[in-house]
Length: 249
Image 1 (cartoon, one colour):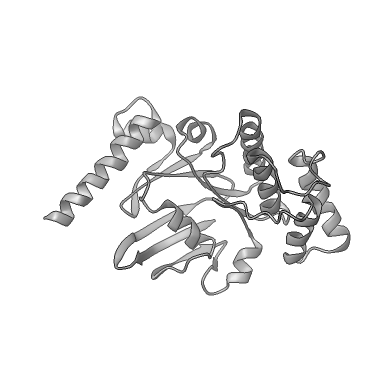
Image 2 (tube, helix red, strand yellow):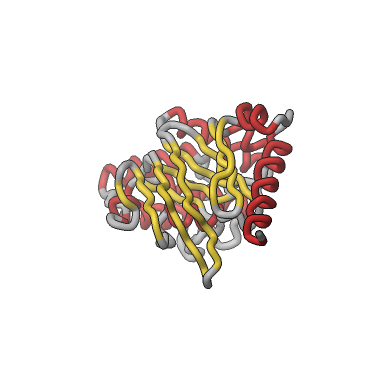
């Protein structure tokens, strides 16, 4: 389980996250929605240990990310907004490097590489250097890197951005398979059809905190809307407007 507890973060005196708290249950896919500037990416970077919170804490499977960063990273896979591929390495060399960083060697390393090679259909890319890869190819390799050590928790920041239909379908199939295997998945997205299809639970952020949460169906009931996009607009933008009025009062 991922637990975010009373997290605060500010940049140059501007508060970006304010008393942010939520949980992501094991074996579920949770979507994080919010307008640009709501704090989604900052939140995800704190969960992954790329940023340190000013207050509060994040627990991954009971491990405090700030106190035990290496233990937290061993159970975490991340697909961020930048792929970070090493373009002089072949796919197998690149994945081997990251698998070894996670402590895999020998037969365990070989099994891990073969598993992601098969699951993500990487045969045609396996011996190619990553320079010049398409966006879909880069996503597949980035996802393979995140999964090669079989993490319990997976974080994805807008993973289908720029993908073609086939690459997006492969990603969705992979996420659903991982959920069935018990992986804890948190992703951000602006694609409402994708969120509706994948998510067990949706969290809506506005002005640095959670303003709504539940299944897509529950959010539609709470907002009185008949689709998730309208529900998001009603909850997120209404809450943001309320926050602005409070600041001016």
